[in-house]
Image 1 (tube, rainbow, N blue to C red):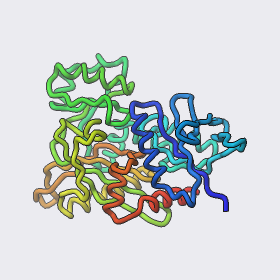
Image 2: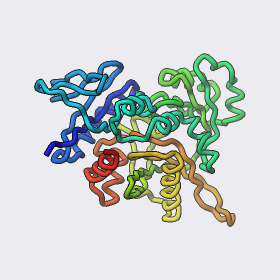
Image 3: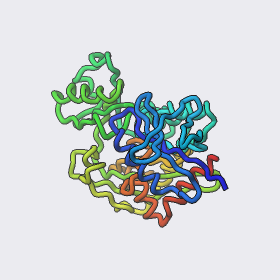
Image 4: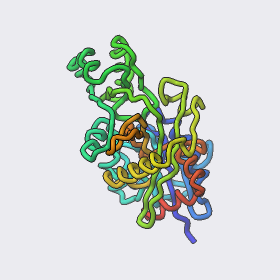
Length: 335
C-alpha cells in the first residue's frame, strides 16, 4: 500500500532558522513512519531543498513542490509547516500551497497573517473582550513620529519593545528608562519593519496548547513559565534558563478559564492545526468583586516549537497522549 508522502517544511528567513530545523527533527521523530513517507524540506530565501540524507539534498521544483529521488519524481501529499517566522508563519507559504492544492498543517492565509502581526491581532481580539496589554506600533522610517515622552506617557515604564512581525526570541528588549528606548527600537527594527511597544505586566506567565479536528477538540494541560531572566528570551527558551512546570501551579478555576479562553480564541480566529497561546496572569477581581486572576493574552504561536523538550510535546505527555497520534490526527483531518 502506497504511503502518504509528508514534507516537513523548515528553515525560513528569520533569525529562528536553526530553531526551526530542530523542530523539524522533532516532528520527523514523532511521525508514524509505518504510515507516512517523510522528508524534511529546508528553505532559505529561494534555496528550497529536500533532504534525502544527512549529506544529500536535492532542489525543490517550485512549480509543483516536487523533487527527484533515485530518478523518480516525488510530490508530497501534505506539508507539515514548522517554520518559525516568515514565510511559514505569516501566510506566505500557506498561499503557495493553496495554489498547488497541497494540504498543510497550519491555519490559512488570513489567520497566519493576522496572528503574525502582534499589534493587529491584539486590536482585533480586544473587540471580542480578550484582555491584552496597552501597546502602540512604530514603523520603519517613521520612528520620529512618536517621541520618547509620548511613549512613556502612554505605555509607561518598564515596557517591552519587540518586532511586531516575527517570533519573540530575537530583537526583544525590556526597557526600564527613557534613554534605553531608541536603542531598543533600532534592535527590534533589525528583525521587522514594524516594532510594537507594549506595557509591562507583572504576573505569572503560562502557555496553553490546543488543536481541533472535525471529530475532536483537545486543549492541553497548561505550562507555567518561570525564569530568572528579565523575560522569556532566547536563552530562557532554548538554553535552559527557565523552569517549565506542567501542569501549572494555578487554581483549577483559573486553569479552566485559561483553557476556555484558548479554545474560544481558536474558534474566533478559525485556527487549524496546533496553536499555543501565551498569557500573563495578573491580580484582578471577578464580577462579584472578589480577588481573582486576570488572564491577559500575550501572543499566539501557530507553528509552535516541536523539539522533544518544547512546550507542546511536554503538554501532550502531561495529557497522557502520544504525540504520534496527535500529529496523525492533524494530518488525516486535512487529507
